[in-house]
Image 1 (cartoon, helix red, strand yellow):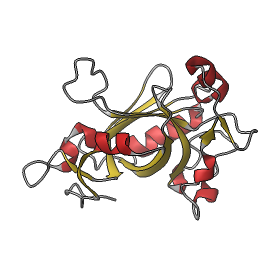
Image 2 (cartoon, rainbow, N blue to C red):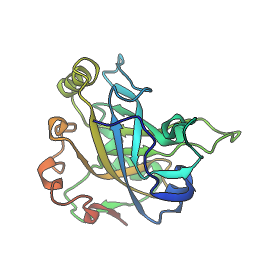
Image 3 (cartoon, one colour):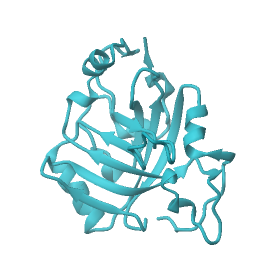
Length: 214
């Protein structure tokens, strides 16, 4: 449960976008998704994808743009995140991504061939080429039953969840890979992947040995 009150600043004199751009290699995000967000919207499309809008970034909390009594922290779109969950498997496949971007990234565990998803940072405000007006997460390799289950819990049972993701910045890629993830146990089967086990993140998250190497 959360309250829609202004949170305590953790990163001073910087915006979320600039904070992320200033990180060297990896960054950890915590995001709340649920009906307590006044921007919340959840729907399924014809592709059997689940689209969730209005996620509230809980970590980090950046001081800019300014917020206060008359301007709530999350009214700034840069402090929110939308998410798509799909059954697509190719978008998680390292071989496909490496071929597309002409790179050669791999995990230290060579048996692991898939990332958990992708993160796209919000475009710079008022940029002429700006297309993305909100931060965006794509979680792939899910399955139909889970998408219906999650839709029911979010839309009808009003059961929220917090998602933690470890994102690795790769300069050659337009979207950055989610290499580790943790979330509430009720939603622990979000993806079908032998390398995603919610129990392994209880005592150790983020697991920075999960990062991609060349």
